[in-house]
Length: 275
Image (cartoon, rainbow, N blue to C red):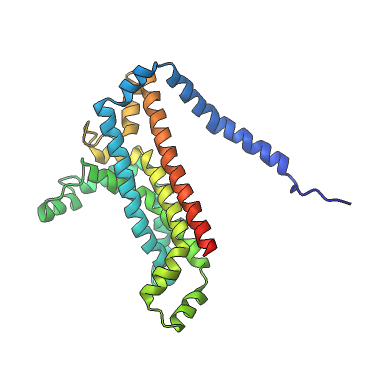
């Protein structure tokens, strides 16, 4: 008697998945596209090529990329320390990593703006010591994005480090490999796909972040104005077509970048498997 190869509950689970994708993802996206199609091509081009819009795109994507790169570097170090060392207060620090998940982003933005403003504790110190101003500049946006995105990197890399087979390191060391060679030739290639995933999650979170950014950014057009704020501004001015055009453009660019990162990740995993 032949048995069905489909796992029990597959059809209801698939139906629920398709219903969720349609209700939460496809319908809003299709509405966004249809609303943008109400504009003529020339009107659409004029909106997205406006100098203020282009400057906002540059600020959003550049700061998100920089913040994701920095968060990936320090997130990897934090995950390495949590998995390789035992120390007093480890559980408390491990819990604090998830704080940005629970803390409202607006609260985080207010706190960061208070600390890094010119009269704040860190802001005054950085200005007096290094002539470095953080608040109300693109640097402030980067700081806010690092704060809210670093947990994605830590929680993505940490399980991979925990499951890493230490016998591979011991075998390499017994063959005369240095610690640097063990790390660069064995450890890093195995965790790089997970690190790239953490980078993609941090970047995706940073591009669309709003609450933690608007308080510390200063929201100065052409300097520290982000795309989500520009979209909200147009909605408040009842320029719905312009807001949807900018949102659609941001969606396409973000999707293209994330697709490239995912394809790169698949290529790295396939290449590692062949090796």
